[in-house]
Image 1 (cartoon, rainbow, N blue to C red):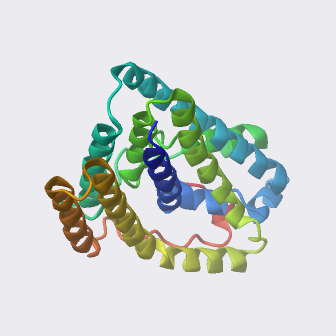
Image 2 (image 1 turned 30 degrees about the vertical axis):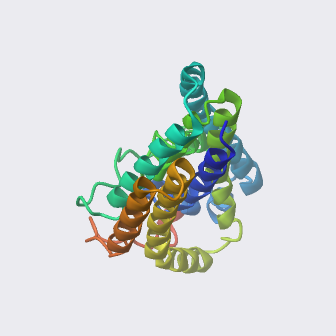
Length: 269
């Protein structure tokens, strides 16, 4: 197991979880599971949020089992750390290009949202845990960045099942904990103010994610090939792709609107 791959996998887990919060589902959870919304439904926010986080952990662990399985397949191949880092470097470079819009607007993809009917049909622990599970997997709702797939790849490239499982479970846990950002939304005014401020960070976070992917590509390349011509080529490509990717792509469907104060407590994604 390459320690560098583990570190880069953890970095990707944090970056992917953060970027994913600006998905339609992620944003809707920050208006649906809040003290304001849960009180309106006659539920306790702390309980629903706890179920959401627990569901996200289980969701991350579920995808973690997939990554662990891939790691188990790679383990007997006894691939060198250099080869594994090389794969990660090229994948991260491609991810930076896609997230940066160099091939057009390819992200987000798998544009699926959670079912808002659950709010009316089920108890708080069901929709809390269910929404958390779907979002925690990283694959069942909107995928906002290739870094989500990068987390799974990096985890698999550890060639160590338990470590692969841990990295992806960390991603799911982080996605679940984001719901706590809404813990102070106790009034319609706070709800509107929160989402205005939160939406202002959409583009900076996207740009930061492109930079992270480029940095992962560069670090992995140096780890794989040292100070060599191939490594230099990937590093230069990463710099070029990152620089080009920080341009703002044309918005698709406009900006996500700030939720209306009253309807937002009963209408998620």
